[in-house]
Length: 147
Image (cartoon, rainbow, N blue to C red):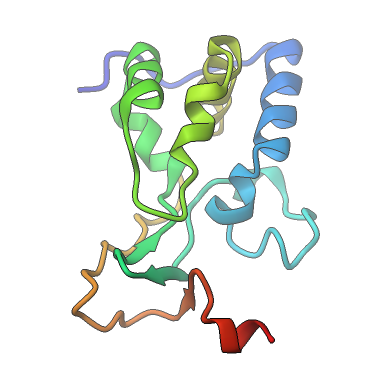
């Protein structure tokens, strides 16, 4: 249940902190389509909408979620609790969230809420015994593929 309305404004200090943390933590690398390929030159209004490229490994195939939609269903305190307790499937580095300072997690939350809902939900998880319909990256890559 969403217990907080959409953020109408964001102070400059919180916005700057969120930009910094999102960039150095690599959030956009997976959660923003084309971010890595564009060397980070993606307009902010397109950030964190998820990606349809899957990450396939022994766990199955996972997709970077649309954080703009995900955060709409959480209060700020719920986000902090999730960040401290959840273990997402690879390649999401859930352990990085646990290392973040609470003020950084709150800045991320407020910034994403400020951006507002946009985009479509990411494709659903595909179990290891099923072939994904969307393109995927084999992760970790097979040794022969990295030579």
